[in-house]
Length: 158
Image 1 (tube, rainbow, N blue to C red):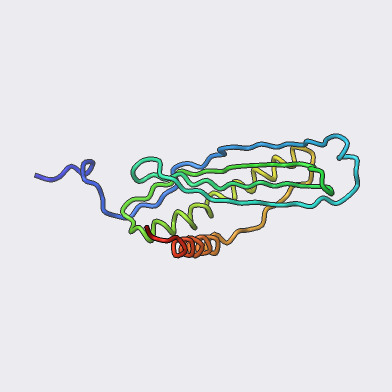
Image 2 (cartoon, helix red, strand yellow):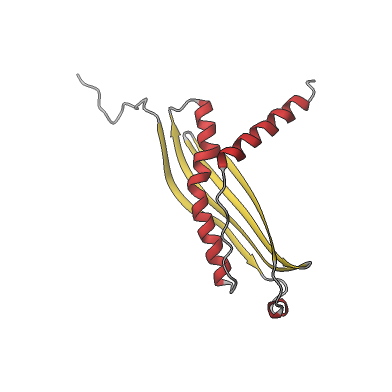
């Protein structure tokens, strides 16, 4: 009697993007239209973050968030915030490799979609697009790991 292949779970490693989606997008122009008449070059500040959380067994949501603030002197020209997320399937992968996939490969997959969505939103608001730079998610991951290790070492045991 042979086993039914549908009932046998494979032990092969699985790493796959199930879905990529725009989770949140907002744009504000609090000082329009007056500030649009000024001819100064704005300063642009970009803040980024990555979050990974389990959804159900073997599925994880990775969210890459960015906030772009353009200012003329102290007044905000525009503020755009976006969150691009992906649902990734990870099965039969050793934990140390899963952590690296969740911290490096997943955000690297999702980030180009976020870049395009933010540039599009800024352009549709009437401004030249802000093209976010490429990010070295491996360096970001390693920095976070080092910071976590330093925090763990500084925390006294009770």
